[in-house]
View 1 (tube, rainbow, N blue to C red):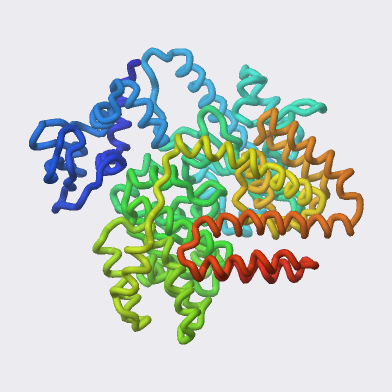
View 2: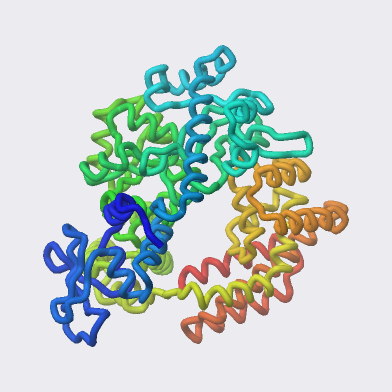
Length: 596
């Protein structure tokens, strides 16, 4: 298995030696380098040195080491070629095999199709039919220069204009469908993007690999934003919107600003903040954090100021802190997002906000303290417990100590007590993917009936979605459907048959999953024939979830008193008659779980 030398160089330039080595051995900072116990011989004192500046590692006793690829190859006892393939896949870095001519040729065709599609969209934006798109962009203060500079396009409100254009250019129907640029129905092939402003998504090597589309229609049943479906050259969770010049600007300035949407990033770039990036319509993923880590250790989060944006900020902090980032958070006043703030107040005001940004811990402290009365003992205890996940994600002991000392001063609680709660007795649970895969399959089988009933209920009555959206679904099909539902601002506005058509049209389900969904949908029509049955079933299914979570909590109880409290809840559950009482008891259970 051989690879192009330039692709090996690319892979090495993107890989971080401390990240690759740190996955397998514990490293501690030693000046500009890191040190740890050598994994290649019986080592009692740290003799294995990792140099980030040189991107190499070496044991000064047995001589083992090398670059990220050779280390990975030796540690895993696999060939160099296998190491290249695994690392490229693991960190989402596209490389080409010398001997895979067919695959390279196929990918080249995909890139050509994407470039041609992009050309089509760019030409359409300045045609008469794109008046509505230009009007929308003008309202967002995006002029013709910015449109051209950022290569924004427009997908016409036609059935298959892009598809017809690409066919005339000589590309095959099969490849166009593979890229998700068009879809096939019983009425023929139709364009995936119609009547949308188009934003190109680039790979780190500056090739167009997908598109984001903002609808121009004011309809609740149509998602405001959609992205290209995943295809041979595009994986949504492994890419970020806004990369320019292969991230050279981020490397040079050594920081990045994470924003929520396309318009935020475009505004930031137009005002000179060319380090702005955005996840592609999803919560920040581990793969996206890994990609960003190859360019900088410093991130400023500038998500929306509404509650959803602040929750997303909290989740992103955990993800980024786990990856070892230094994190700050922007807080805007009198603006809902960076786009609005920049256009209202300009570059200098935005720079002032950046300078006044909060360190991640400070942001969380402010956010959590707003939820609790800190002069109340029990409330203060719950407040401290909120930081448990954050401390799970912090690796550096010094950093943990500094945070503990801050909490100690502000809460007037002894450092030792806080350290016991948040560090000593706050053990991180490590997961082994391969062994968990079997357990996951067993759980899917055991819980499938409850999950299936939940989906059937929500398909019938979308209003009930809010009761189950936070559940930890084990079944892949149901996870996909609930994620799709989360993309709609008002899910209850959709009729059941409209929703089914929408999700089947997205082609995000595999063939057997589509059959399962249709089967669940068909059964729900006969199972839930009136409102009374629906309300009763809501209570039954909600109670089933409650019992599952209660059982799980019992397994992980930490004290005899907690066991007693859980048994009380279990006994009370037997005598619940209506949904309001059930919901009240469940909320008490959740509060008690958070306290412990």
